[in-house]
Image (cartoon, rainbow, N blue to C red; front, side, top):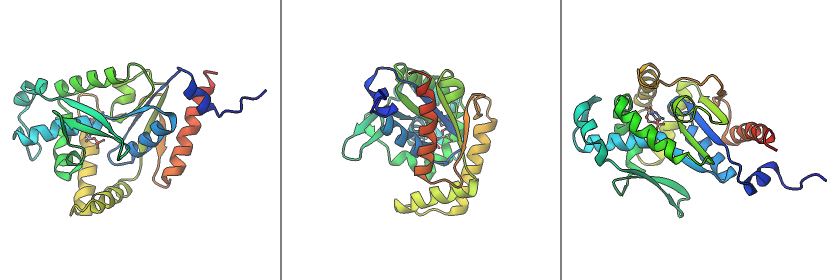
Length: 245
Ligand code: DC
């Protein structure tokens, strides 16, 4: 008799879990897809970019970065004093970022943090520390993590890898709407410049540059809404799961 439960339901009831690695360009909606996918699968979601943003916020507060100029050795020297955690907030139903015990979820999304984060994320010692934490978080699988090096460095053996992208003008408009809705006064041109600049630095840096893993599937969501993307990704998840039943 055919199993009356959907494959995903059946899958949730077993202990077999996969790892989903989502990489791609800045502001292309990776985290939106990753969050929705994690919720659908009952998996943990980790936003690895939030970790680099939290380190950046710390550096900004202690004047270890200014206009993209980082006091690299000083920042590396205080790395052990930077504690980053994620805690689930039942009222917002979101996992939120904590820096040394303080909820910094909103602050790390500000444009000033975005403007300083790329050079900090390019420092090899900082990447090593973050990657170690990320591997630890994913050691039992059942995780969806998004970032720039998840499929290439953090989880090279992930069962499903996605590389998400969209045209930069579309990405800038989406981020502009998001920040404006939060009450931030920003210019579309500044955001577009920031996105293209981050893409450039992320893709050309020496330490773990952004690149598509050989076995990652490309998802260009320029002309897709969130529901279409989730359907697309769920089909890919199902294909992976079918291989296990
Ligand atoms: O995804 P995001 O825009 O919040 O990421 C912030 C910055 O951190 C981005 O400019 C690139 C960097 N990053 C990275 O280098 N590696 C990751 N795994 C995630 C983010």
